[in-house]
Image 1: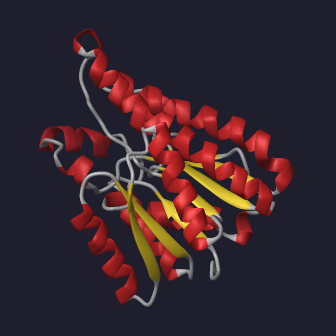
Image 2: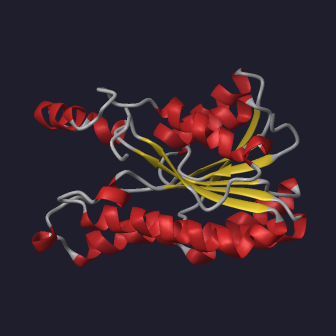
Length: 246
């Protein structure tokens, strides 16, 4: 269980982030629900957590902004005293073929998905080093391992997450801080709900288990990596993808 722990989950107002926030709270953690766009959705997550007997707070921050990220993390530490678990889930897509992709589309995805994770780790790590404990969990993607046509920016950002995870794991291990990544495959979220039926069928055909996953299945993996049971696991990439990468 995670009672007495404080967790920060970025991009927690929907999809996988929402499921992770709810799961960690159900295990006793106090969860800081970070969002960038929709306060209404973030408040829905807070109400869901509280309805289940958990405790949570809502904090707006664009994690791609270095200065705002510093203030966000400092405010959480000032308010709640510590950060035990950081889940870097915030992410965006701006899909398009390489030859037509704008510089803005590339930069925006890298800034949120990869630099955003660097920003939060940068400011959380000092507190975790003081505590001599901590769990950092970064959301990568199957696409960061295999690549995907039309997603050069997204694949690069998610591959970068794997490198960042391993480098941070090596730097922080001596103080009892673990850093791991989860690489989801096709999960039932807003991001995949817009897939045309033919694309969806083609995607399912690539999955040995024959279906899209659920956000709660990714959340279960995050909960394990956040737990004491995972204390001897660091620098790893856990694939939650129905067997797509094996």
